[in-house]
Image (cartoon, rainbow, N blue to C red; front, side):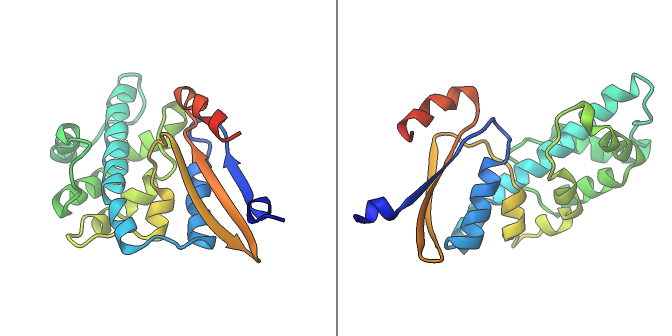
Length: 190
């Protein structure tokens, strides 16, 4: 039998944000080479973006929900932190100053009440994880951990491939974008 016939191919298909890339990253961590220091450093801006984007979402929805009588008003003493996040660009680095603003907002009862209503709007599951780690993420020498990588979210475009071995079985796994405009690429692997 040829080596190609022994190779097991796994194609991860599903709707956008259904967990394909998370499973892919878990398989790399458990059975592949893991993530090198260079790979982990490559996730830094993704973690920054996920953290900033999630807090901006909470700030926006806190204001909107307060207009409808929800107890989501951010305390006035936290307005400087609110303003900082509102003005913050999604591609900004999370330094200790920004991390402190995120921490202040995460402790705010209005933000907590908004978070409790997260089923009413789209917020990544990893938001709380990154908010709790804000001061660590804000360190000058921050390098994402394996857990940070697993919890990070970036839209997959195209096809990503990895190979690994489990109990002498060779696998090749493909992660594909799940958004509608990415699905035509699936056919090249079927």
